[in-house]
Length: 409
Image (cartoon, rainbow, N blue to C red):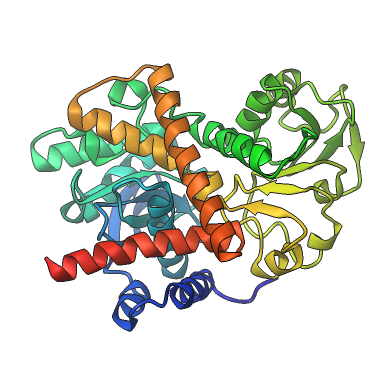
């Protein structure tokens, strides 16, 4: 496992792309540091008394547009993680070519230990603490780990009260009745499928067998959509273990089974296996769970021709090196960017006071994400580099161009 901190890892990726692009030193230096770090302590009245919580909002770079990125409520949230995530959001928004910069926020808290009333109080208090630094043309938060559309509604409402005017575009990922967008719930998975279909086409992958690690929101949606499109889902893993059926798993029945039992284990339409999901005989592997799952220990056992990273950072840097030349990796900054594009579409609708239907949302998503993939594929071929390296070259190049434009303005 990498002993590097997430931010050191992010800076290593920046340095590599800066060298390939022969960036001017001032640009590399500016991109090595966030523009602003908001570090707040705020009080919340809970059932056990008044407690002080520690929150952050890191605004990394806004050369291409307002800062944009999620808010996570997690016990392990710290400044190093939030800085790294805000850098990666800057990259992701540039890869997708949406007019946003990057930011990220978080509160160090175990949300499972708070009830609904306390979570509402926490959500509102956090926005109160950072409200002067956000806005629909300044910095636009969204949900992330352990935050929900309902929490986004509380935050948008609190922001409106503080500013004396409700502005739905200040936060994305809201419920539909509060200005959220149709299509946003499965946009990460659908965007991933659109990218996969392009990749399968250009790399000539004929066999449509898929193994998926993670059966949460992104993983289960991806399984359903791929199943409908004629792919055979041969293995699925959740946090409790793996199931396999070379003939194909009925993912609709599996979703109902998991809803009832809480796990994929014991599903009558597949066998439990002691083997890791990464050793499955399949042409496509989709990690849709946590970061650093593909490591130097298991990378050599992967048989898949293509990996679609629906999770954030599922492949450790050492594993990347092992898989180079052997397995095509569609990197997370593109593969799971459907959620980011969904957020952008919600923001556009809020700004223009429009409501898109599902077909318009899907059409816009397919057009934008396919274009982004083709751009990376072209850069990867032209420079003879991996798709991940191409993603950083494309993104850092776009951010650098915007920064040069600001300098000359």
